[in-house]
Image (cartoon, rainbow, N blue to C red; front, side, top):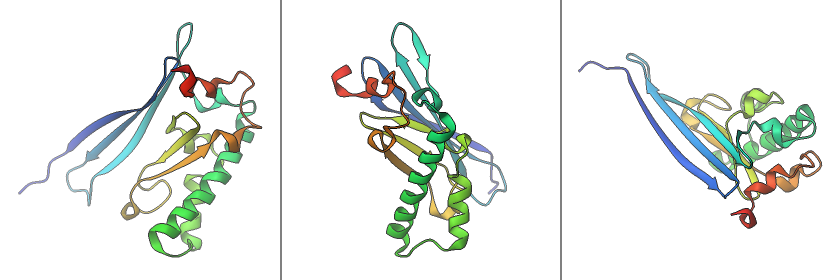
Length: 164
């Protein structure tokens, strides 16, 4: 038996209204000789208004760096809760370093996000916030928890069912 390189892709429609479309795309790959395959996420969020706009996370917020800081705090707290659920214990110092690095206040850490009717979902690939064996992680952050940071243009409301 000889291991070979491989790649597989999958996508999903996370949320759709007449004015917003949120897609997730998972890319899996294996390099011959590697211990295991790996994967990462790509996400695409579109506003369908006068014309089609691809949305970045910063498009939703008044002050991007402040919003990223708040998202980071919320995600790290949620990751700690999820770790407790998965492992039956609080994360140790080493695990906290993973969380603080992979979900710390850096916009790149939150590049893989989707938009639903009332929240963002942030996706973390293996190795981003924990060891490969812990798998993929995701955190839902309610619009409510970010109300003070959201743009006055109400871009997030395009995901609400009343716009469907």
